[in-house]
Length: 303
Image (tube, rainbow, N blue to C red; front, side, top):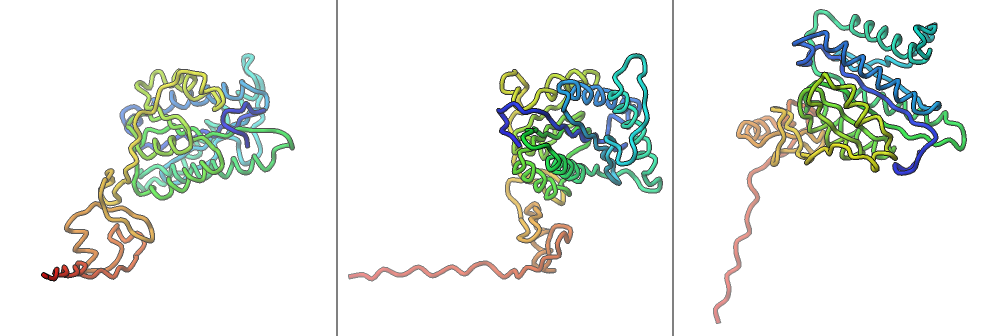
């Protein structure tokens, strides 16, 4: 592990690709996913081309599970040079596409697509980075970062998992970058700000590869010397678990840290039932009494 401003011998990049079919740009045109995947593969190969010792991992995030797309957990594919292409680049492209097809085919057909399991994919990425660091040769320094490419919306249901991942990444000096393909993601923007990464909402999917190479390809030690787009003002308000909207004032469960908006229904539910008011997240029992008694004012003695 090295300081962010110090050049390192090698760099480890973990790309988390959101392949959930519930994303708006995939629903409108499923072929766009292939174009986005090609851009991610070209970006990944560019990272490997920068230094001979650079390492890469790609994780596919779906609504039912997350899997490693590269490197393959089993035996690597036997590839040969095609049209003068470097064998490693061919291996990366074929492995990612083959394992992505298997990931999509393994999804349950009877279930409707739900939320993307991005928090779990980030936890997998941190575990992979920790394993690679333990296997480093003595005296070799390596910088690590995670890039999230997603078109999904924010999900308050994974708020606690997100925060655990963000602060763990900060402690391990792992940068988290986010490339949003559709909507503004306030929770992931908080993660970028906490870990020192970059956040970018892509204006156009046609120029995705250009944005990836321009903004996210430089390492942390090089970014201070470049003119990169700023992330803007970071909204650190917590998201409501019931309506999934940012709050300024709300209820907080003392055990599970669930946040709920202040409404009459929550007050009545907590007072009448006595359990955690946020969708029974933790079933915490509360002893709620009446309002606090006010002490009577002391009368001043008249002389």
